[in-house]
Image: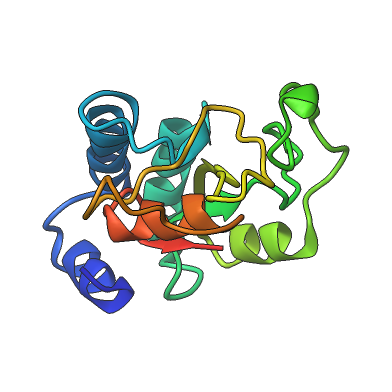
Length: 166
């Protein structure tokens, strides 16, 4: 579904932000953590459902902030978030939480987007990246590498683990 499709479904009352976020969390669990283990999402926002509830309440009281209101977004793990680790793809930084959000993170949150988690920076054939959770897997052909440091973001969208990725 596109962003416009999701917003139309919200407007029609087909589902809530909380229901949408739960669907994505379930999908991440099924395909990224279990099943084929795509290894595209290295951190799931532990407050995703709480944020979704707040965004539902805001939509009901004042309407959506923008077309991105409650759209689940995954950020590449070199984009700072003040509430989740930013590892830059290194196991040495697995617990490093920045003091504030990057400009793009802040802008997305201000627009009402829901930061669902952080995407792996993956590895590629040359092995130049050290992923926190291991090789990111191409969801359409496990024998083909998804490519460089944005592979986690690309796989997350390709496997429908988020609507949008940076």
